[in-house]
Length: 80
Image (cartoon, rainbow, N blue to C red; front, side):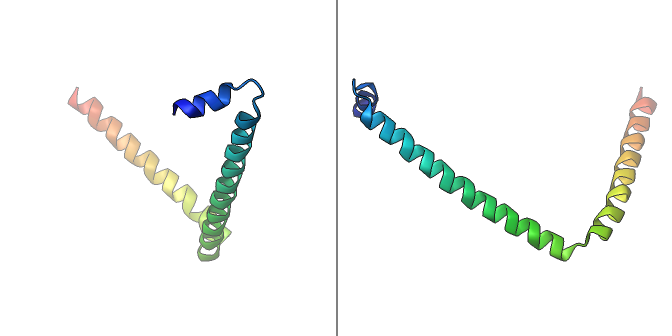
């Protein structure tokens, strides 16, 4: 760890710059890999569920969540 810090503090800074370029390259590769995986999962999801069914189930889920929330708030009011 100390040699790493010493390399970064060198007066010419060449090894520090090279290290930063290497880290930048590794970050780019990891980012692209994650992006490809997420895109593949989204493609799989859209293949299994059409947009029509997605938009028809979303309001139902929101309504049921709202009903659960209202039922929970009524229980809180009745317990007071």
